[in-house]
Length: 411
Image (cartoon, rainbow, N blue to C red):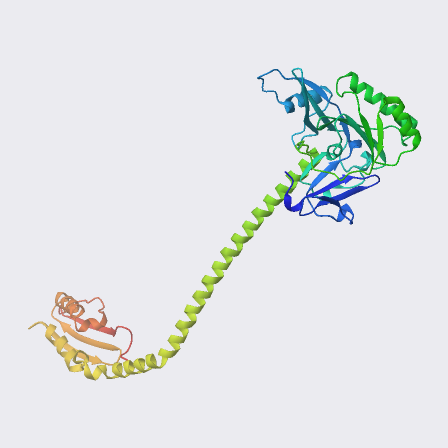
């Protein structure tokens, strides 16, 4: 259904397409601007030159659920019109019921609406109409009468039965003269013979016509001819569900682009959120690091004071820690000596190294003494090295051990 917010009709006028807009009261008025500059959307009235009208009778037995659309589809398929998955190139509407039959009005596209070759002269793709319908269905014609008007340079005649247009046709004549009147007479008789119309009561002419046309038409059909101003178009009471396949393909392409744009927008949003979060995380980490640096800068004087105090303590450790006294260290060495069998010959101590030398009665005693030195808790501050002891001619084993203070010299 046409949107009420953008209710507009683009309909073929005598020489060019016209734009009609609905006011707040629902009255249609012709816009003073070209239709190409009007609002998008709305209804597009397809010119009769781009359509082929072919009414038909369909059986409608009582109680049967007869679909005019299905019947019309078979009707146009039999006439060689192929279906298109992107749209519906034909329209169908109910006209009348009579003796178990249903009369349907129908029309199919013979060319793309808006195609200059079909006489349209305007590109409908620029305004993207919301709906399409047959131009002849936009005018109210009295029942059992016909109307003649000019549409994009060609003359059109439409026949009314009940409340619907049963048939329309573009005249071969390029002027409304006697020849045009006889052409309309032949068309009216053909429709009447086939039961599509009853005897005509009158003819409405909504364009300029000469006396030759009106007088000949009165004589040929015996109807009253009225010259009138063309009425304002009105939206059809029931839409015809006509959708040119070209429009269907365009809508599908635009929908695909819209979906693609949506996916791209979602991807961009995800990209922004991801890198935004990542940037925020970096900012938080940077802020935390900055606070840490500030705190570290604030604590640096205190840390330096503690370090200096620690250095002073290390400097005094040799004098305050009894385990580091030379006398205590010598005492530890002496306490390891057995009562008999080992004699010390040298003991020296400096800031980095302790040297112990002596002579044992046997290699076994020398090795036992070396192991006892290494196992002493106080002397474990040193890393000890005792070369392999060997016995002399008198079986005595001289030894020499060097202990290096772990971590270098005392601070």
